[in-house]
Amino acid sequence: MAAPNYSLKTNRELLDPNFESYRLSLDAIPTYNVELDAAVEEVKLKDCQYTLEHMRAFGMYNYLHLDPWYEDSVVFVDCKGRVLSLTVTLDTALGKPKEVFCLETDAAAHEERLCASLSFTSATWAALSDGTGRLYLLRTSQRGQSTHCKWEPLFSEDLGEPFIILHSTAHVQAGIHTMEVLLLSILKDTQETTGSGYSVSLEWITVANTAGPGLEKNYKVTKRRVLRGKSVPHYAVVTPRGDGLMVASEKPFVFTHVDSRPVKQPATEAMEVEETTDPFYYWQQTAEDITASVRMPEGINKEAVHFRLMADNISVGVQGFAPLLEGQLYASVDPEASTWIFKEDKSLEVTLQKHTEGPMWPELVIGDRRGEHVMNNEQAALIHERLTHLTSEDLHSAKPDRDEPACNPQELEDCDGFPEDTSSLTHFDGESLKPTQVVNLGSHQYLFTVDVHPAQMPCLCLRHDVDALLWQPQPDQPADMWEHVATFNALGYVQASKRDKKFATCAPNFSYASLCECLRRAFIYRQPSPVDGVLFNRKQGRQVGQVAKQQVASLDSDKSILGFRASNERLYVLTAAHLFVLKVNNN
Image (cartoon, rainbow, N blue to C red; front, side):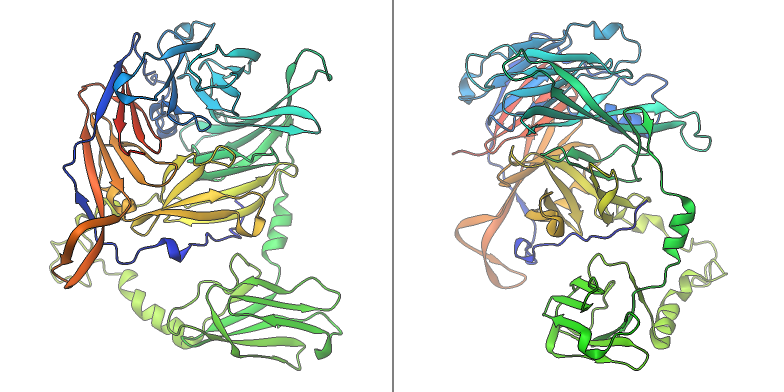
């Protein structure tokens, strides 16, 4: 796995340290429903699909799809293989979903079939899988119109093993209309002897119009790239121009094949040499300041040193060489109180005065792994003293009563637990197939993915402490590739308490977030809004200006929830027999 070299940068203006809690609102949520002509069939997992990854990929699949190009337009596939579309304009006069396409194959006859999956590629194209291994690319015309034009298949090909579609996008490359489709399958791994016996495969397929100008369109697969990993990715999306891939997963993915040719993996010896390379700089810190010693090239004098320091940024270099230390500091410093000197051993010693005394920095420059942190003896002794009780040879040394366990796991809440494996968010370059930016997500639990704007990549929502933060990928900004765009206060903590939670999402305008259980109930968490009248916090003795409301909707259905999506005004819930529409916001 590539070493982390990037950190998510939180926009503190979007955080609310004074947020108290959600107030339960008993306001009724207008709910409407459409009875379906044919059931939406939930494809049950087979006996051979017994792993946790099978359940994550296929057992928790969202059967409902919200069209990001046309607001309040949803699509799903029923048990007859019909692709049905419903556009809501008036809640009190919901029409029947209209058929826009029908799958040709009898998927039910395929022994290892998966659920049908769909992805909106552009305003006029969609990608569809029948669950048996066949991929369709459909020209949809202008979706969302009342005419409900039939979708036209311009590409159909059997790609082998059954798969589901994770994402698709379209772009024009050198004047050629090109579509990128990302597929997921779980394959038997004959080389796996200690684990489940399966591996997760991501296949990135490029389909382009190979016909010349003025000729009838002829779409063909022009490139196939395969990645392998050991866990189903939480988030996997191709960049809008098709020049990169972003993957968030608990275990790393690597490219293994391009057009059936194996990808040469980095040599182990080269990796070992790289790991033993001497650090570019050493640094140590106290509560008040930081001292860094930077190695200088041979034959360099003081006059050749280029040094620039701002409150949040540093640059140390030598004329004629690439910068030796450059980037955003972990926290702010006082430039006026900071100094540097050129030492006799041809090293540069930099002393930085911390702007805020006390907190210890985990790194000097965000994402820079070329330095080594050196602890002084006092710091090492203090840490050793604090951790001694955790490494005692006597399990009960801290508890005289031998009948009591050394640690009571019941004292921990469910929402305090995180996956044992370290999750990562990685950007792969589409040309070199190598990771360029890697974020160690650590305890930032993945919550959900949502399309906010059709021209941009889907956002991913991560837990940060108790909050849920929404991150917008910006592939054209390598220095700031993931932008913090919204915060849902305390949602990270709240969602962890929902034991029966199945799906989570939010409105594209961030006005509310919502969770649903496996059966019947949906929870809506609204952003804080001004209160009518005067409201006081009795404990703190201050007036409260805003209140965040929580609402609970209970559906009139005993069927499992199979699909769950949110628009700015409505919440859509799909069961096997009904499509429910909840009017959450008014214009």
